[in-house]
Length: 78
Image 1 (cartoon, one colour):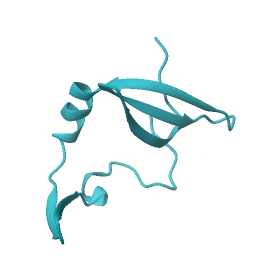
Image 2 (cartoon, helix red, strand yellow):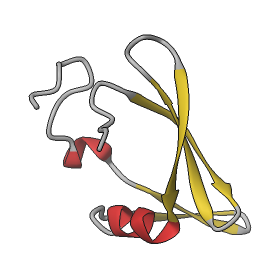
Image 3 (cartoon, helix red, strand yellow):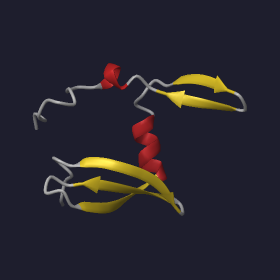
């Protein structure tokens, strides 16, 4: 099984009942993968979201620095 170590997720968008994830690999090339909505919900449940009401919609946001194990500019440790 391959892993996405050393890659950067550049976008996530719905594709029927799944989510299409586009990543930029370390060689600069782009690839796409799918993740189920259920797996994404499992991941999102790890965060504490804030709710901000704007006009007609309520938006969720998260302070990613509260959850970050490593800094953006530091190499990964695994």
